[in-house]
Image 1: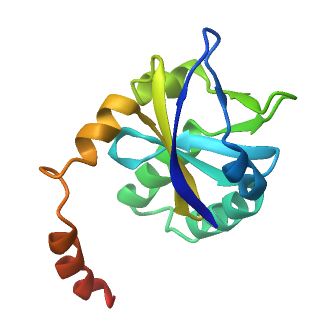
Image 2: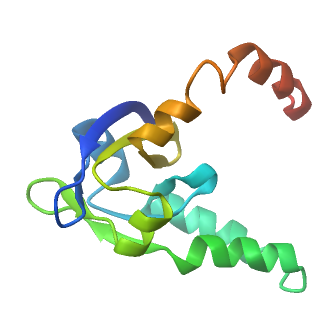
Length: 143
């Protein structure tokens, strides 16, 4: 299971070190794509296959479904770790997530999210997120 929060820096070429604890679960080859909330999503090869299968079930005749599939698949790239445990984030994905130097990698169960550090700090602030409010809204999802 992908869990935890790790701060790292992009190098001048746009490479990022994958934290060792995350590396064990995501593998040496994985997929990075545009995510929601302005971050990037990273999936292990197996989780990506599961995600793609779900996308394939969406109706081609529904515009929202087509937009959803395009959003995730158009920017997706396969990444491979080098001997130092680094991987390259493509320029278009760095631009999408506004990544210049400092980033945060978080594990969220079946995927990782890669955030611009400043954006993550703002998103994760007490002013933005209330655990009590989140818990209250989870009853609608059956949790």
